[in-house]
Length: 269
Image 1 (cartoon, rainbow, N blue to C red):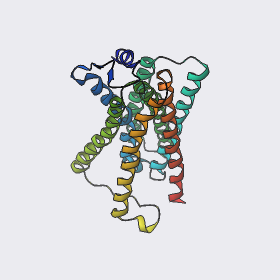
Image 2: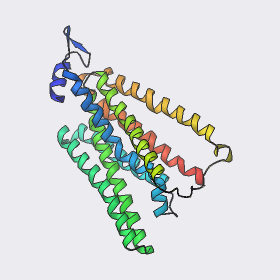
Image 3: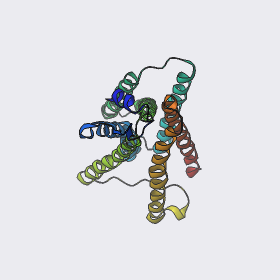
């Protein structure tokens, strides 16, 4: 599917029409495939970060949300940098290989968590909890590596296609967060409540109103504006460089996320 679309849009560099003929996407199957891949790309990370109260219960002395963010974003950035190096001077595995490898890594990282939970239940000693915490961080690291591999490959590939397919990817990533939040609400409503963790940061931020405005601002910048830039950037270069341009955009987006994750530690200083 992807190869056929790339072949069709080569001359028009991603335009919806080539030589006066519309690009054929029967039943919008290619669009839906990119949407589902976008969901799968960010669903594991949203699962990890949304369950911070669960991990906080297992490891109460750790700053779970901040550690997870730095480990995940840092490992994802490493893969994107390596992909840029591969595309510049070395052989890089093909798209299918990269995607399958990343999806397998996603599955392994998610399977690891129930296993570590079982280890904590069987033996709750301090030494065992410390080991499972390290295993959990390793799972988050693998998940971040997979995100860099899948996300970079997906965005780079979509850079060769019409803009709507890049939009499908980012719609999928946004929908994955909504999906996980729905599952979280259902789970929290079905189980007994746990004590709320203390909020860190300045006192004026310890209310819901500033958080609502901050969330809306993040939705605008990292949602709409990021999607627009990701769609436009690959179209400003030649078709041969479109995939590289997409990977570069993903890498700089990840750099910003890593910087934000590191700065997040200032809230607890």
